Figure 1 (cartoon, helix red, strand yellow):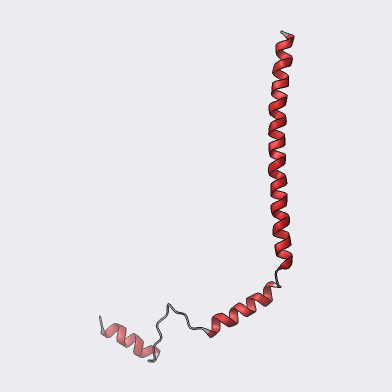
Figure 2 (tube, rainbow, N blue to C red):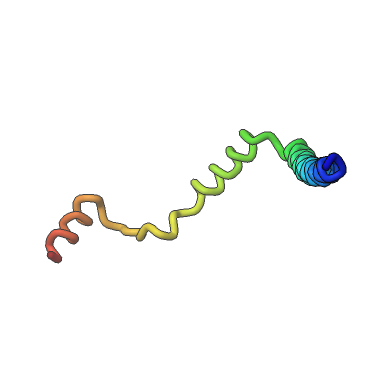
Length: 84
């Protein structure tokens, strides 16, 4: 009887050890990923500078989804409501 209990305990220990090693592998993988992210973040420019450059580019080009009209705002409303 004691042999079976000892055998069951050793099997349980092996499974517990396997789960701990699997969790350790997952944590190590996450650490490597975060280290790569941190390195990439360290190599980027200052965010405010990048945002200012992006804003300049966006303001220079007209929005392609908005129609360009030569008429004033009131004329555009009149055109819309007259066509109804």
